Length: 88
Image (cartoon, rainbow, N blue to C red; front, side, top):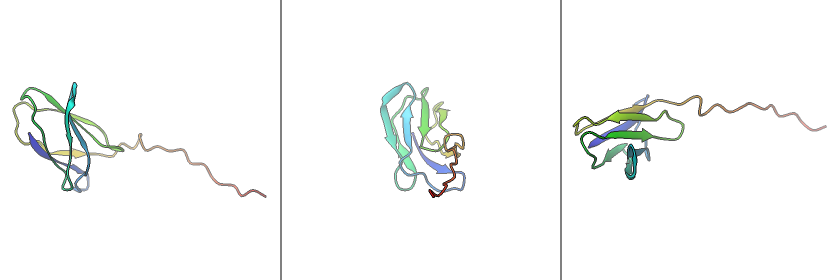
């Protein structure tokens, strides 16, 4: 299976993890253009993930080309705001 991983603005995601679900020893990462290639059984499922993005599971179903768009995971990036108060 070959494909491409982009964000919602169409920019390639470099270094996204592309792994066969249930077999963490079979995986790869996307290149500088967001492209990947992985040997995987036709009935398997791909898990595509990247820090700060929502993980996607995609059933291969015999497809040879799977392009993916990952969206921001705003909950994963939810950081509390702490105002700085000068010490007097």
